[in-house]
Length: 133
Image (cartoon, rainbow, N blue to C red):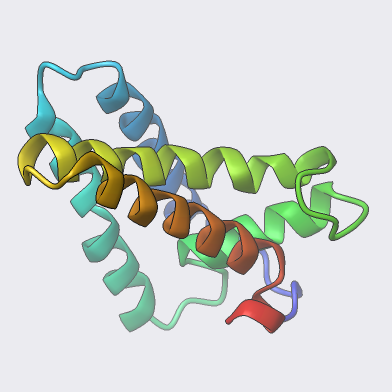
């Protein structure tokens, strides 16, 4: 995956708004369905990005990878701007944990294992998609 294409401005804006809404949903534990709908919004936005043939990067992974490669001077995990991938992955993963334990009555240990696995997978994918798919 090269970084020749710049992010599509509309999709980059939608992903940024979604991330800010996800942060807001974390601050509103009294409204678990808000977190559910914001987290679920990943699928329609990603689906539209897959179906449209735009000239820019429109999927979340493409945009985050582009930003990291523009900002970071290296590909070492957890260093410099590469922490941005970790922060975004933690926000996404923590919402999955909250939804599983709050809405699904999953055992916290199992939900925690899934959250940690998701964080590691997202971080590695965004840092080196050519290696981690």
